[in-house]
Length: 606
Image 1 (cartoon, rainbow, N blue to C red):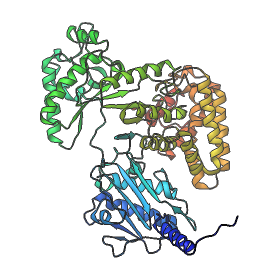
Image 2 (cartoon, rainbow, N blue to C red):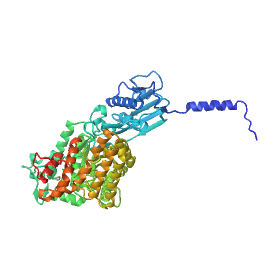
Image 3 (cartoon, rainbow, N blue to C red):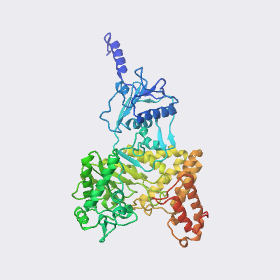
Image 4 (cartoon, one colour):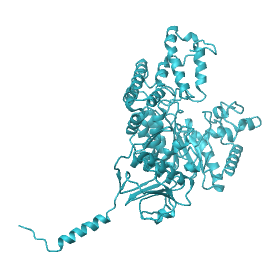
């Protein structure tokens, strides 16, 4: 049967379609930004002005078009509004940020306009870096290598309305290059730069060891030995290093008075602080006097006397500084939470994974070390709303040896966040550590967005940073991890006996980096491969590294090791490696150690 369309219906239909299409939101072609500008408010804060400069620079690099930065508008479209100023709010895509957190951000792309704005002081700057990554494919790989792909002839984006609230309020890794704080901000670490142009640091400080400075035995020990820990009936009043050897007696009322006064004085001198440490030193000499032991035995953990003391300090802090958190480490002997004592609402627990296994993900049920840590994290979560993690992701004994924990880092961070952790410090090696640049990239991206896939981040970095040389490097990473996992052992952050290293792994390292150097497409990539190849001679030296006397070194083995020693220290010197292990294990210390082993004079070369 033939359908008959009444007169006028077709015209109405065409008009209706046109109106619908006209009302539909459209995206933006990032390859066609001629005539566009970047709008910044007159009252923009320094980080928002910096955001405009960064947007202008990277868009120009990607597109070849330098957009002018303006503070007024004379048309309704072709603007990139940066920051929460009045011009943005009055625009067609305007919104308020009154309920945004300090780092919340929103990106709107629609109908020939772009808005990037966020909470102050860091939200807009973080929003610009997020835009550059998500929509221009830019990758901030290292402090001196940013991947900026050309935008091409057409790059349609949107319409987009994207909001992000970072789940962690404290994000810190020790890998970031000290000479380039801007790089840390590009990766959205919020603890490395106090520069207002870079958004400043979070007001939340890392919780560290403080009793050594708050009640030093050099000041009080001679006249008041009772202020310090009792071990086997004796007080450790006079020691060389409080932080490594001593702890205060936490049930002594004078100790409470002195530490509280020190904390209040610190806050009076630094009113910008929003957290302060009241925490144990870096040793296991907690007080065993009758009063301290009574609390610890009742609570089933030395954290009993520590938290009782910290709560008392926190009560006094709350009276004068109700917005300040008092933080303490849950570390070494104090990892286990107490049975009945709960942290005050203004107390923050910085839980440390000192005893956890690095080979397995934190929530791997078959790993006994991690199962215990997860139980403690879960129990802390029942009594405390302010849990931060101090997570160890390095081998403190040997920074340049392979550390097969790259597969565990992503799932572990995800697990921490899922269990209400609010901040994470990933304690790593220095910039001279094994795969430091790769680890910096992976960890920083995962702290900012824990839902990202760690394996994809690894492959992305290897491909963009090492080019054709990425293949053998990835195979070596797989080999090291497969060997460690197959060993069935559980290795924490000290030592390498559980990682499965032997002569075959050292041989594979040499072959890997030889092949990678041959595949590198230019001198820049060859230097990157050379820098990371330091793990090969360090692996080769493992059989002699910890020997102490020349008599322990077989002469034939010494002859084979000399070229590896020379190569290792040459690479350290060329690529600015300062530490071979946890401080004070510097390159200089290691050089002297090996010279003694080889029975060399001070001025002799290997």
